[in-house]
Image 1 (cartoon, rainbow, N blue to C red):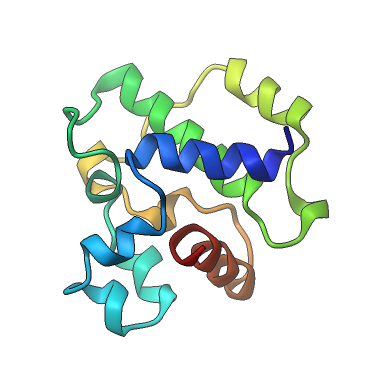
Image 2 (image 1 turned 90 degrees about the vertical axis):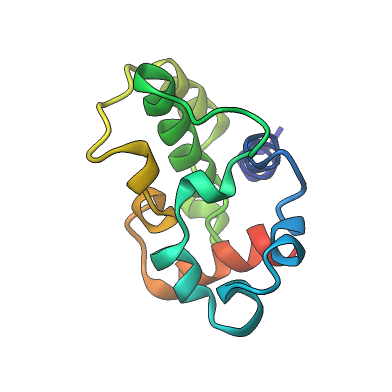
Amino acid sequence: MSSYSFGVVTMEVIMGMHPGDLISSLSASAFSSSSCSQINQHTLLKDVIDQRIPLPENRVAEGVVSIIKIAFACLLANPQSRPTMRQVASELIARWPPLPKSFSAITLEDLMPQINNCDRLRIFQKIFYN
């Protein structure tokens, strides 16, 4: 499996639906009429994850955040910038850092790799429009 595929499958599992379905389910929100830059600045992670399960807490929340960060890194537009599956595996077994703020306050932007806005826009287009 490529790391890109890992990123797509991971986001689908965490969201509980195909990532593209998010747009239709939130058609009245910022997704329908504004740029992707608003998605990463204003969308809370808790609003994107599968709503059928309770919000994770403590160590589970730290794990979810860490895994989504890895998934976003796997979805970088430039394949050379994506981690290898060996790097992904290594990150998955590493100790997860404590959350910088409460799980309910974390936005998608907080989880994005430190990249330029063009790459960030391409990631969100791939997640939400493919």
